[in-house]
Image 1: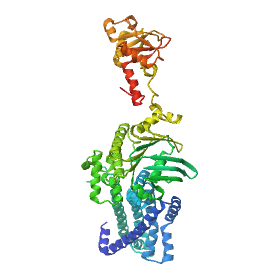
Image 2: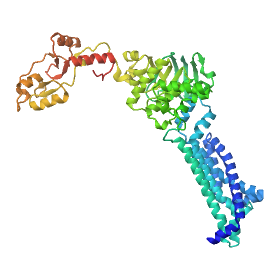
Image 3: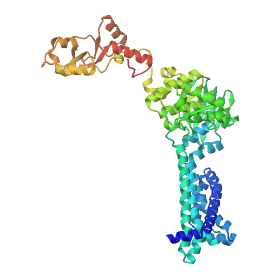
Image 4: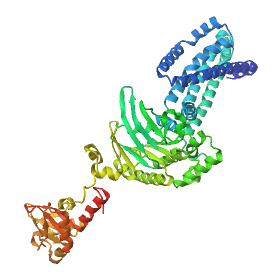
Length: 216
Length: 375
């Protein structure tokens, strides 16, 4: 243990850089994933038959081992930050898209009926009623996605994207377990932190819906 | 105000509404009623274009609906549904102000209107404005649902079984409330229900539908007194008005006369009278032939423990036949200053009694059209 701390203190700069790289890769992948998957999930609610096909397709994508996809990405896009971000982006789509889709379609029909009857346009129904009511489920999708991406980002070291995976990989190759732990522990903590933060957001959103007390 | 001209409506090949012609006047509370599947809700939703007719025209204030933008149209028509549908992520205030906001009313005007509306139904703004719908009872929620529909003072309000999910007592209160508000605010209301009690209570005009057609459109009185056909008669059921006055003794007698066999003990008879709050009993023999009447006075004067009612001296009651006219029975009762007449058939069997109370009940039934009127 003291070994590890000594090792970490000596190499803190390196660990810190790796953490930054790791966050950058994961964040970029999840952000792009969100930007693409949530509108896609919303669009799919209008076409249930297409939805089954698209969601099925991405489920299949997510079963491909990430190491395989990384290999493919390397062949097509080369090495570095963007190829690995692209692969992680692909993985991030499914949870967000699926939860957006189920969240929106799960909104009780009575609210839609009331909204339509009062003269809300389709866009207004979506933004003022469906999205707010589906928000906890959508955030849960982002949380799942973030947890996956942060752990899988460790693999992107294989194609030279850097991040905490670099430390783990180098440590394994040189039998330096302190180095492995310097990569693995922050990666775990990052995933836990992201999960905690998004669970909090999810609870806030669902408390707004099922609020027991007054607004004040 | 609202006019349907040869309106038909079909889902695919399945025609729900057949060639409907309908007119609802301004300021009327029109109730659409009929068995489930009769097309009453469909008819309602044609008015705010949640559905569109496949044939025919619908006019609102003389203007054809087809030419109007459905979204704008709906903002000008109040809409209340059974499921209420208050938005759980909005406060009461935000819920009421939805349509005013859609119409871009300035904030002060919105707030003033919300306060006015809450006052209208006697809800305290300080308590309710910032509350969320979950904290409200079903009745309170539907009151807010009603206010939400009234917010921009639409001339027409559509209500789709609005009180169907409420408990009976709250439902009654809400019926009074909607009637009061409708008269006060002079709104045209189209109200869907399957509950005839509700329709009779609140309607200016009842539109009875069956299989996508109107069977009869009439005021509650007209509908009850002259139903158009057998279906209407059956549908209004127990509410049917007596045709003219109750005419026979059997129509007005109290069928639950307390008759006891002469072998019954005195103590038991007194207990029975006490339990039912009556001041006399009829005594019959084993074959239910009437022997006479025992009032509380006779029992008090002669009763001893161990005797049966058959041992006492009966008062003889004037008897009338079930087929005697009610008018005649009434004359006997009043003319001879009696409390009670026995209704007895040719075989001497007791059918009931006619008392002043049963007379009043019969009159009340005729006046209020209620089989179960209590006096």
